[in-house]
Image (tube, rainbow, N blue to C red):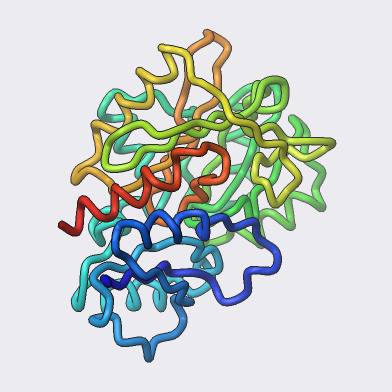
Length: 287
């Protein structure tokens, strides 16, 4: 039986992880799957035919170490997604590449080092309706903040301290995230698999399940499907797995919020065929 490793984080207690839904389909295709924390650097990665990056959501504070581990794995066996996609997708500046290639994204102001004047100028440029600031390298909505049109001096000071000499991005708050939700479309080996709609609850604006968002299976309409494939077609090589998050804009079109190619939660539990589709994507690639 072939061996596959799913890379995980060290402590899973605060996260919703459904990778185990793929274990039996992988087994049925001749695979034994082991969940291995990426921090177990003494692992003999060559013992696995393939290593799949899964729930490694604790890497942002240890970015250099994480990349070193992935480079080490890539030198010994197949890594999914491929290392070149990891490097490209690691910083959300990949959105600039997509935009320059004709993909509609949420308007973004890129800041290398934040100060009070830069924050004020960005909010003025984006206009009224609030804004969102988040790190260029981050995961699971950590250090993402919703700002009103007028930000008090105390909060400005906290944000400047957090993002001083730490690249960040400032975007207009897309109100449709609250009123409708955020769409996530999933692709395996370039083929559409399933989609979900994530809607924040209460006073929360973040759409991650860990922050209380409601999740439901959805069937994308034609325009959203079109935007999904347009975005995915800009990526080379074709990802083994991908999640693309969209929000509806005021013109009733859809804009990319994020394209997750490293460690996206794939919500395999939400569609009965998704686990097998994912298993086939890995199996077909290795063959």
